[in-house]
Length: 74
Image (cartoon, rainbow, N blue to C red):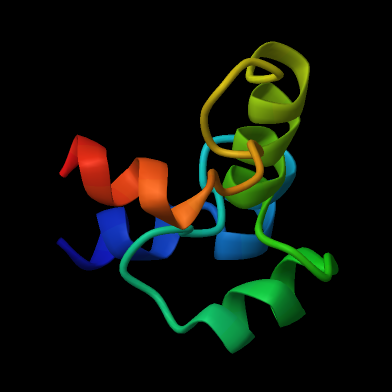
């Protein structure tokens, strides 16, 4: 077991080879942003880019309707 543990590559080496990646889910957001070097998590950036590319129909970015019409629909 000691031989195995000593022969394991370092965490830094595994990251360089792309085997080990920074966690996105289940970790502290501030720590993740500090480690990744980005201002916004990549998953949020990808989601917003997808919505902006494919979501320009009635929905998320649509302005609110007239309050009386909304009440009628409810």
